[in-house]
Length: 385
Image (cartoon, rainbow, N blue to C red; front, side):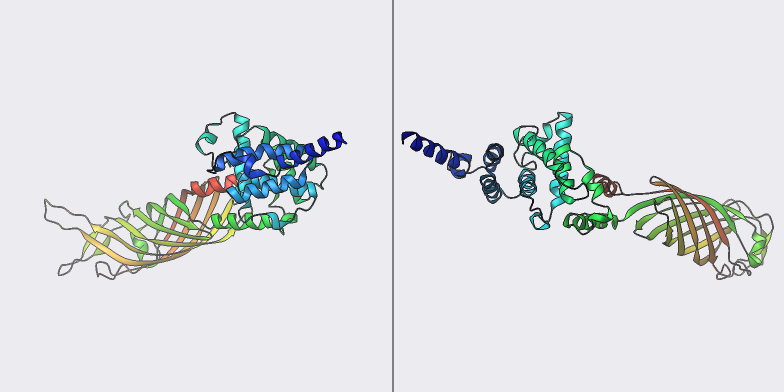
């Protein structure tokens, strides 16, 4: 009979060890999550080792109530669901990816043996030191659970993630067979949000300005320029500045106000305006891109240069410029080599300096880049394909 009482007492005290959490996890009246989380991680291991699943579940719930959801709490919740084979989307919080990325950082820290990040950001890591009892136990437990699930299941992905320290979960969750899972929907929402952010665009171009109609007598001229702007999804918005130069091969007539016409071959011009582009074709891996481009600009050129010694004032030809065309880009990472051709609607006779007009064509080779480092870093971290 005495032995029975002793055994009964041992059972009671052992159960209390994993259930009287207020007394076990902190000894002072003031509650610190750093103490609760550290001690809870150790007692979770003890309860699980002794196969006290219900006690472990109560412990995790207590841990969450006192300190909120952290990565260790989330991990313990997932593993308990895998053990009991009752994993559902309902146990996943709204920021599941946050805890997955948090664990990725923990694994990288453990592999590199550089724990200074934990010392700086203990709260971020749930006050559970990396590489110690909790991490070792959950990793071993996940490895054992992995082989009990089908490789195409979401349960397998989590077991693989926590067991092997693998980050394949982020690339696999993009596959069609997982698209109905809550984590895949969250992943798609986040990646689409970042994909919609604008990229910065800058480019240099060099080409020719080819007049048509009566304007042909001015001849072809080389053109160089620069454009800078934003690429927002399929739309492109750029400020464009271009310079055309080299004297005309032919003399042409110009006229000042209240003066007789005179001949000149001088030609230096410029264009400043806005271009609006729309992607109409983008290849699967974004190597090739075709755009329709439309723009509006202020255009003109100088026909007589200033000569202060002879008191000759410069003479300019000015016009509006509405243009339309297309562009092609071949991407290598964030850089591209492209071609841009536009037809320009102008009227250089507006200020009565010349009495002929025509609509020039511009054709240019373009070297540029499209990039948003912050956006790309996030998408890379998310392993977006």
